[in-house]
Amino acid sequence: MPYPTGERMAATTSRRAKTSSALEPVAAQPKGALRILHVAAEVAPFIKSGGLADVAQALPAALRRLGHDARVCLPCYRRTYVEAEKRGVKWLSTPMIIESGGVDHHVGIGEVLLDGMPVYLLACNELYDRDGLYGPSQHQEYEDNARRFAVLSKAALALPGAIGWTPHIIHAHDWQTGLVPVLLQRGFCKALPATRSVFTIHNIAFQGAFPAHDMRLAGLDPWLYNAMHCEHFGRFNMLKTGIAFADRVTTVSRRYAEEIQTPEYGWTLDAVIRHHGYKLSGITNGVDTQVWNPARDPDIAANYDVEDLAGKLTCRRALREECGLAKREDVCLLALVSRLTEQKGIDLVIDAVSPYIIAGRMQLAVLGSGDLHLEHRLNALQARHPGWVYTWYGYNEALAHRFVAGADAFLVPSRFEPCGLTQMYAMRYGTLPIVRYTGGLADTVSDVSAGAGTGFTFGPVDIGHFSAVLDRALGLFQHFPAEWAAAQKRGMTADLSWDKAGREYEGLYKGMTCA
Ligand code: ADP
Ligand code: GLC
Image (cartoon, rainbow, N blue to C red):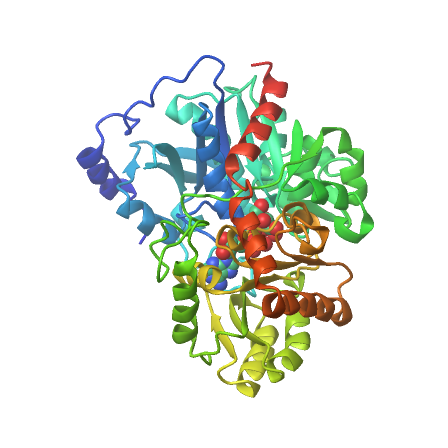
């Protein structure tokens, strides 16, 4: 359903809000507190296709716990509207007019509180009121994505004026918001002369590259179309633009900040990253412990904590039952929850697991969606091993929780992984992660062979190395239960919370604003 416009909007607005700012005033912030506006294309629980949504929700929340006035804005997609209505969204009476390539878009502003945090929904029916997020299907993009996200960046900068709130920092996430820094720096929004920009790269493989003429959608001077600014290999590149113009650039783990400076991981932008290295830092994401907590999780068969893991056995039994897997408690149950793509190393799993299943050492449960050829190969694997392999295609938040709680070990064999969240969720739930030693996986999982480890890591991406790490994990599971239990406990008590990352971002912002 589209957000209300015209007469419907006036009716809705007058029913719900008499003034232009519909929410109660936010409590006064302590001295030295910063005002920070986060801008992202996805924010959980309003819309989510991956970890960006988790971060865009949890990071501002962590900053608020530190006493800052952090808020977040995102486009109001069709699904977002439904979620926002459930949460009592209030529409401001006057939409913003955002010009893009000679067309005026009316952008309505919805306000909703998420655990006390103001979330602003930017509603523009002709751009966002669609079933898909980035395209009609996972395999196709919308043709007007350049316009959709140029308008997002412009609307985010116009928002503070519309709600009468001036942020010290605008923190933009990923290519969809890559034009925020350039528009801010080049004075698109005169009301924000002192506001500084932070741009976070969540995945450098996704760059938002469009034909050169799409630059007009942002109203940027044509001379900026050059290799130092907005152009990259003959395309208008929104990620590169964000990197070039932001006051500070961050990425989502320390190790990934180093990796993207190399040709192997830089996806052609490594030289650009090196050039801007003086303003780059890596801050490793955390886990939202409100959402991912085995002691209080409403989606799992039984709750448990580090003192008493009995509930985990119940979760394991329930997951086997739900997935129709053979009831073999002596067998290691491996789970994977992921986008099914080349990045995530799903092909490695498919190629490697059969011998372990035939040997009766392992069962596999996969929850994911993505490349159809990987789904076909997983289907074939399941058909070969009925009762030992389970697959569920699509997006299912509650099932993801049951996988994380019910499995013994959790696979994240990514070719590259800027941070990765599921390995941390697994650790919180006493499920040992088996990960490739890269990016945030390397920053968050230490190998049990090092003594105080929390999981298993492997290096080169090939079946030999992947099979070797599976051997080690299965060996520990079957023959050294005390060591396995010790690793579970270390993972469950590791500090993976957002508070640490929140403090690092706070330090970064303060360094930029002298607050
Ligand atoms: P990425 O953002 O690269 O996909 P992350 O590990 O950062 O990887 O985040 C993935 C997020 O999406 C996690 O919260 C994970 O639980 C969730 N997720 C991925 N696939 C599914 C799925 N099919 N169903 C439910 N949740 C999923
Ligand atoms: C991206 C990355 C993932 C990261 C997430 C949140 O989707 O692929 O590794 O955890 O963003 O930062």
